[in-house]
Length: 116
Image (cartoon, rainbow, N blue to C red; front, side, top):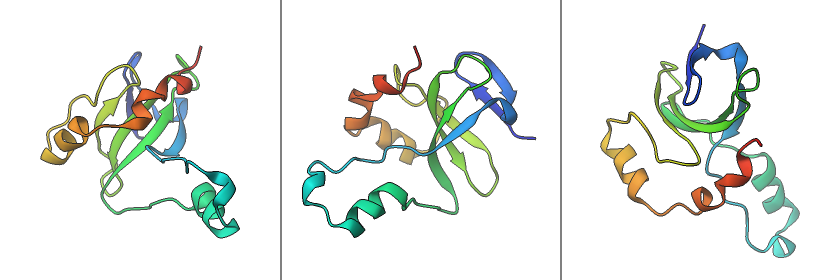
């Protein structure tokens, strides 16, 4: 069983969480000008990489809060967590440091994903 560490509640079984899919998907600015194919790609097409991938998770049977996890899809190892209040935690790779320093529009509006 995969153990996921909730940033607020600590380590819990995977069955307590719901995966919200790929993180950091940018919504098109002018949706009126999109073709049906472009809109369909935005709604349904997601990356499925072999290796490190950023996902959204919700602790549905716990605190009900959303967070992002950086997970290796090969080993299932979760390499770090990011809440909507603070940047990525417990990351070692140079790539993670680069992602942390890059401007992130999604982080500015991420408060809407927080359960109240």
